[in-house]
Amino acid sequence: MASVASPGEERALLFDGRKVFLVSAIVALVGWLAVAIGWAVATVDTYVGYLTAFAFATSIALGGLIFLMITYAVGARWNVVVRRLNEAIPSVFPALAILFVPLAFGLDHLYVWVSADGVSSEVRELLEHKRAYLNVPFFIGRTVVYFAIWIGVAFLLRRWSLARDREAPRGAALTHDRERTLSSALLPIVALALTFAAFDWLMSLQPLWYSTIFGVYYFAGGFIASLGLLTVLAFAARRSIPGEPWIRPPHFHALGRLMLGFTIFWAYIAFFQVLLIQIANKPEEVEFFLERTRNGFGAIAALLFFGRFVLPFFVLLLRPIKFDGKLMAIVGAWIVVLHYVDVFWLVAPSREGHGPVPNVWDLAALAAVGGTTVAFGAFLLRGKALVPVNDPALVQSLEYRSPL
Image 1 (cartoon, rainbow, N blue to C red):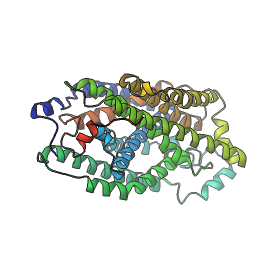
Image 2 (cartoon, rainbow, N blue to C red):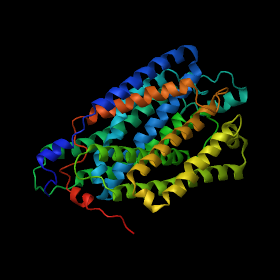
Image 3 (cartoon, rainbow, N blue to C red):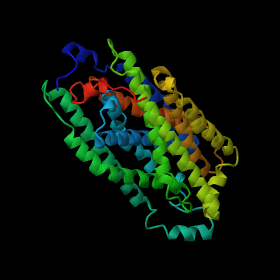
Image 4 (cartoon, helix red, strand yellow):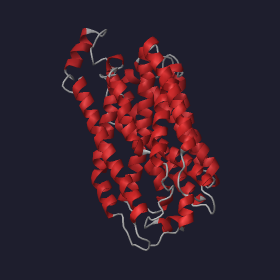
């Protein structure tokens, strides 16, 4: 299939990225300076904020990777015009792997199972039964494996996509056979790595509490947020590409339908996790939610219910809104912000004394982690076409029409 872009149009599609890189690098630098101060004067609070920002950014990258793999596995074509933007989201995994290093040096400030200091003898005895799994070397080793899997898959899918841009001859009838095979084979592995990462990084903050559905909850939140971020990127790309729009209202409508569906899915998982634990009424299980409804955190839970579910649900039900790129970008940005609140609600109550409102150290960590990942992603995308111009399904994507 021939490319639909002339050489001049292909050059117009190239991403400059200098402004995005510069702004995000400045944000990251300011954030890292503040984080360094925080580690010196408010160590625990800063590590809480850093873990929140790290888990937040990683969940979005994971959502982007899984969405990319699913579209290849099912042979989707509508999404080709936003595929390069989708690839940019999980491309930041190498930066996130490096950003884990500070956490590895501060595990004792976050996880009671590291030293078990200040806990009762009964709790210490229970933790001993989990020592084979919850120990620092194994914890770090598992994280290395998780990132090796995610980086490898994201790297190959992006590399093959970019190679097609550079090397595919015009008129070649290329297929996505290797992308589809890789995605179909490794989706379960990526999902299992995500699940155990959620157990390790977040659920083990309270090691006596457990929920077999927790990994699904973490996935659902990050997946919706990645769709929200992709919508924001698509709107920005649409505005920056001169000439006839490549990313059209039907593409925003498709993203909106997915966000609506997975908003319901996230709420379903959240509700039944609470319901089943309430029915069982076991002290070690109920305590997790009791801590997240006390000391002001109940207001955060209410915000998540109304802001993360009710508001997006009713807004995304409206068909005209889903066809409006600007409105969809606003909805996507809102979902990303509320996902950060969700991760904050999971992490902050685990450390006594942390308030229900993100403090300066939380915001500093968010600036450091967020600025670093955005700068890294912009650096990788610079000079690349925002649309995969030689993709064999590009024409079908451009001609996509939303179902009634």
